[in-house]
Length: 197
Image (cartoon, rainbow, N blue to C red; front, side, top):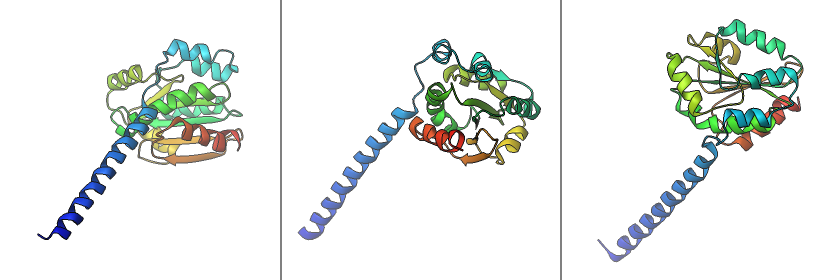
């Protein structure tokens, strides 16, 4: 091997090493955004005290896993007509769902006095695993248990998770597939699709 080839190979390895270090740092910085909030359910409720009655009813059920499937979700959405609403479809086994829960924890506290947040645990085969997940990632709103996945498909028009549906005050919807890796991006979309619509 000539000296020129050795030099080129060493330079390429140095560039790859720098690239790898940069990717690790980038992953580390984005992971900090997805960590769960340190707030307890009681602290979340306290920060949201004084919310309008329909939103306060959601906060009173924070972290709960509610029964009723599609009929219950549709009834809740009807009761919230006139308010901006964010529905997040998730499942405890869904890795991208887990990665975005920190963003939903923070956004729901930051915007929960004017926006209704609802979870939809869709396709989770175990009620126990879903409850355990919600204990690890408490949120300031309830989720509806949808073992069959039918409610999730009907509400989000998708069989995938995670999916987020935004409704503005008039009921117009915007559906976004894929995880939110930062609360800043989620909050920006809440403003764009739910509040400004």
